[in-house]
Amino acid sequence: MDFEEHAAKPLLAAAGIAVPHGATVTTPDEAAAAAESLGPVVVKAQAPTGKRGKAGGIKPADDAAGARSAAREILGMTLGGRVVERVLVEERADIVHELYATVLNDTASKGPLVLFSTLGGMDIEEAAARDANAVRRHPVDIRRGLDSAAAKSVLDGLGLGAATEAVADVLVRLYGVWRSRDAELVEINPLAITGDGRAVALDCKFILDDLARARQEDIVDAGVPDELTDLEARGRDLGLTYIELDGEVGILANGAGLAMTTMDAVRHYGGGPANFLEIGGQSYTKATPALDLVLSNPRVQSLVVNFCGAFARTDVMTEGVVGAWEALEPDIPVFFCIHGTGSKEAVPIVRERLGMEPFPTMDEAVRAAIAVAK
Image 1 (cartoon, rainbow, N blue to C red):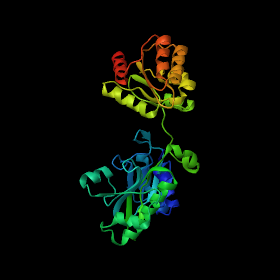
Image 2 (image 1 turned 30 degrees about the vertical axis):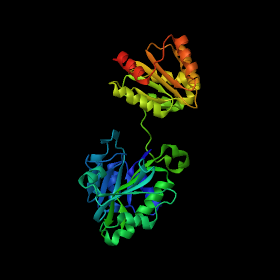
Image 3 (image 1 turned 90 degrees about the vertical axis):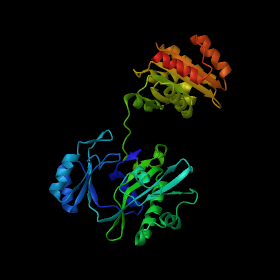
Image 4 (image 1 turned 60 degrees about the vertical axis):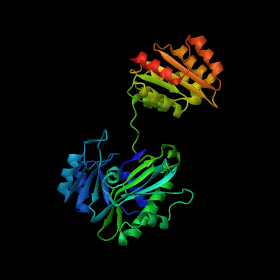
């Protein structure tokens, strides 16, 4: 779950990281009123997307009239596929230097990773492309956390001078936000060193791990709701993890990894997957609504059912899907691939009740589905 800047910064402030004073408003007149009390400001589009400045979504204003004009231009813009409905009017900082800091989940180290750069204010990818040594990487042992000494080691040799202590403190606190708030990523860009020597977070990106919503009930309502298609909303209501795609080959598989592998195979052989749907152990009890969900996508021209059993039995899953097929009687070609626990019992179910032979490999089933769909 993404959080807009105005909702992410309070998490930093609560952890003791300095943020500018500001107000979130929804009209140009409200923006002007906020600027009256703040002085020179920056007016920022609130949308969970990057590169807002390049898209014209961040504008400076010297006074109330300027803030009103900036808000009028920004409100109603479309950024990252979303219409801007609010802006953050924030006091302008006296910036001496801009830095970059983030804590995120790292697949390589299988734990949290601190990234830091003195090239703040730009995309981290651009900074890394400009200078491979510009981005410091510090994997954190989650059992020990990040202390001041480790944070200072990240900053060693970067020439931050008197600001080193303040920046190291921000890194420690930022890690604390990541850890305590179950974040996938928490990023400050830029982290500004101001004229009075403070380290101030001028922007914040925060992504909450969706599986942690129950532990973070006090902030969930401040996040940006997922934009779901009608079919995705229907899947959510059914308790199914369904993602609608723009291809023509429907997919039913047990296990998220197998579903994604099947999607990759469809793409590899020149087709397009119409959906992600991991049904797994729910194949028996939810097969009918799951199958109906996949086939409700008008783009679906064929279906691949790919089961590989380990702990879950493929005969039980197949019984559920075949029963659903018999109940719904869809007029669409279907191609099965079944392996693993229970496959000796599962294959005859398909053969005897649907009059078809499961394919010996996933690749063959996928190629057949693509050929029919085209």
